Image (tube, rainbow, N blue to C red; front, side):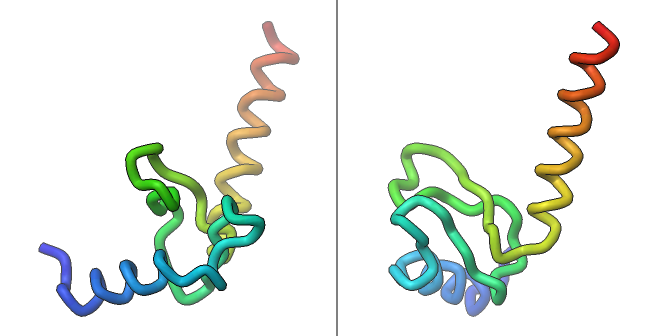
Length: 72
């Protein structure tokens, strides 16, 4: 079960406009999550560009797509 204090931090960070670049890119180095809800939570998830693992995930996905394009 999630720690209520941590969930409160997630909620506060999510509502803070300083953590949203151009209104759509979530950037928060304090938030360890890679996937976070979009500003309108009914629209799904987005990436936390403040987490270095996000860039590894993007690189991995791009590599898989490039490999598929090259071999098929």
